[in-house]
Length: 297
Image (cartoon, rainbow, N blue to C red; front, side, top):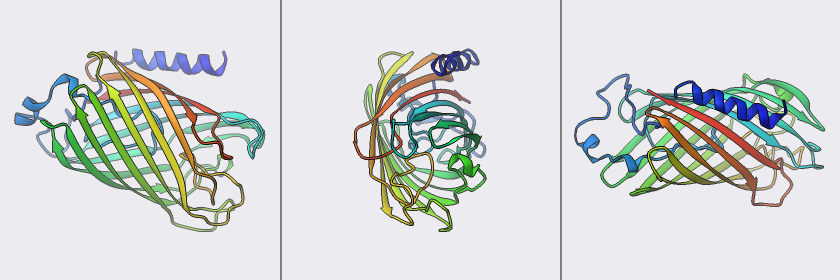
């Protein structure tokens, strides 16, 4: 079974596990959750789709309790530093509403199988988690703002370009216009050490999201992702790590992801996206397929 078939099969398996992704948490550890006037102001067509692409970095403003499963197929460009090939990533994210405005976000983990001209190895990814504060929740006007901070532990395998300690700071905004929903997220990443053989840089990323509520079962999505090195450090290879790892430098990278979300029933959604680069510098982006499932509780 080839890579595409395996990923498609995994998506179908995920879809069968629970057979609409919640905008608000049903489970709140310390609080009463979504009720009263907030619930009265919320309409089904106001339901945003959670970010699909760049899952480690693209965080929306909502406080939810859910599990998100991901399977990614990433194709490297022919030639270049990695000399073609591909990588497959399997990961799970857990989000828990601690209160109606504070969320625990375990946003990075997983397993990577890399098969490129330069690296042919597999191993575990770094682990990262943080807290999000959704300080503005205006359900009537569909406006939500949040900030967050997280930390990545260098627990991953260096053989697949992981093993980085870094702080992450982010801010996000989401605004709905009835059935049309827009979002933006900005991140700043600051490494904690400078002894990496490939260097570690201060870098930033931004992410734009749009989805349209066609019906209770489907919303198409389009997303843009940008990655920019701010402060280079020991640029050993002429590429950036984008959302994979922290390297010493590299060109700016901007990508577009086109996809959609299918909601078979309440509390469950499956999503997919095809992502490709808009920039033409030297990077590790050929194209990417992302498959995801969200189980809300």
